[in-house]
Figure 1: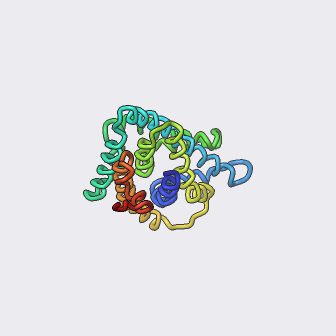
Figure 2: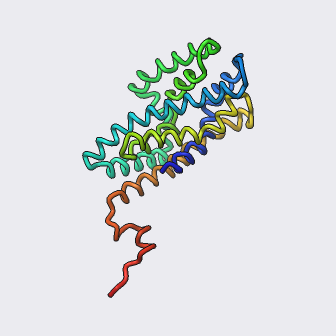
Figure 3: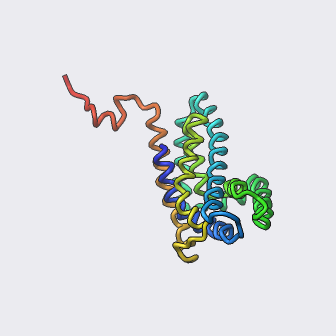
Length: 230
């Protein structure tokens, strides 16, 4: 699952380039002392720290599901929601950030980030990155759904860490001012999210059905050790 988390982050960074690219480029334009790459590395390290913190939170919730013996049902339910959001073209970013709870949580985050960016030279890059990591993002929501099904605090935190590391290459270059793609291309990358949503939803459904599947009925085990008639 950790390789899946990294792959989600890497593919999802295309979506991030469209959604958060302007913010990262704005950050790269701030006057800062020292090597140009260091603030970008700290900024993206801060994002990953926020992802890991959220992973710990959702890992705690997932552990309760595990103790209640409903982890499989949760995995299938989340997977079905993702597949339905793809089929009905539901924008996860807008659906959550525009909800009542979303507005209550994200508006203070946006306000804090605006204040930090206005005087970013006075604040450490890692702090700005940590606040940025709390902004509404469909890819982060998908990763948190995966963290929820990991069944442990450290497992969930590591899942989110690998997700953050997957986003690092694209977002690091953007935060240091390197522009691989035009704004038109970055907006087009936002179309990546629905495809990743569908694929990850199918994986969660499969994982949910296979968690407690008897070994003799497990597809992969059956291929390696086919049942033979006596």
